[in-house]
Length: 314
Length: 314
Image (cartoon, rainbow over all chains, first blue to last red; front, side):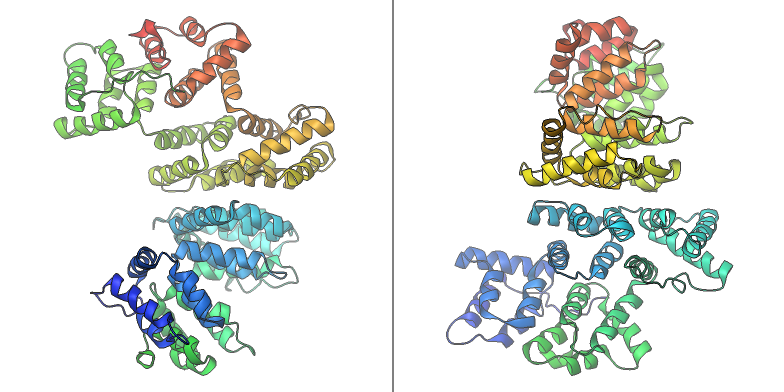
């Protein structure tokens, strides 16, 4: 469930006017920005952006980019974007880095619904005039390239039907390939990138039953590929647990990876951030809001807490 | 341009009623079926099918399947289907054969627009409760599998911008891989399945400039893969020429491949069958209608001629 608290009734024109007011004069009224945008759902944010454009002939995002700074600015602007467009932006900015974090690609490819992933590819093509898979293929090689291109190109069936026999036989194929001497992993990549999530989870369960260990256990090594395979399996197997772990590791790293923190909270605030918060609390014995509040400061902190549905923020 | 001749004004209810009449009593009035359905565009056929369902609580396709026979029945029923759904059906029936004609997969993957190809994948998932690439991967192995899965998973950028420098460098990569000793063809498949069609055509032109021969020339061998690579390049390079060649070879084979004949004519009748006819005439010195009329008989012949916009048929 979502954590975002948005009012039923709202006026996009009033919101646009108040955002303009917050940006005028000396300094910006950041708390006004948070109290408006931190409490509007996707549909409402779209209307506010349109109203702003209509009234002031200016893009709200461009305006906020010039008024706000740092992680706060980035988070607010990402939050205003449509999710597919935001993902396209995240993927491209990752690919343009000297040392891209390929986990972001795996995360988006494996956690988004098949239809949403198509939306991301469409947004990417529209923004960057090339296909997402084209860009990934140019920036990577070997098995890493194969798994990333296959995962982002996937358009899985998303029904619940499962073929148990196939799940068992594919669990054996995965085991033989992962623990065999052939590093090519062709069948593994085929299975991971074409089967439905329900089918894959049945396969992972059969793996556990047959080999008495989780499939991700054996996945260590020096390659760049194996951690991505591991990430893909974890994202497909239990996205909430995976995202809770991302948040925990982000918060517990010296020099918190604010990009990852924003990414997960912004994307989940209207989806299942409540579920992620529950897993986070259960595993770490500390509420996510508390951990975030300890690790961030100022407007950025207040904005994230607003998205987390925290009272503190308002 | 399309060859189909459809009236501006029409009544879906009248058409539905006349189709019902054609199916009633002893025997079916095939010429009535042809004179109606052979002259209705996609939008009109959709409305007729809905009206038929509404009035008679029966699917028009199921009704015609029970009334008509042979290639005629199959052609009329395929014609009524939405293009994406028809492609999904064609792909699945090909994959279920003992000896599938993989060219059909390449043809659909490389000739349809990127957006239409997504529509085919969506229709496939809806019809068969599994993804197209999943099914292809199960039925194929090695390099053949790699190229087919990559081509159907493609969602190319479809703008006109070209990077000439990249085209030249990739022409060299293609040459080195195709004429080298490495049969893996990883870069070839990456380039063919991710670059935009405009970019690929620039690459093929550079290939010709540098090596003084067409890229398809060297592509012979015993594998199942090389003919598919050749087909993909031809479909991307000049779909009209490719389809005209398919029609010519179909018509000139003993025991004409009626499935291929129907497939090309039905799919192109509302797209660029006029262009294909021109290429056909230029290359073979015989009008396509004449060749089709010589090679088919009865209602099937009349139906194809109607789609070809031939006077004879009406």
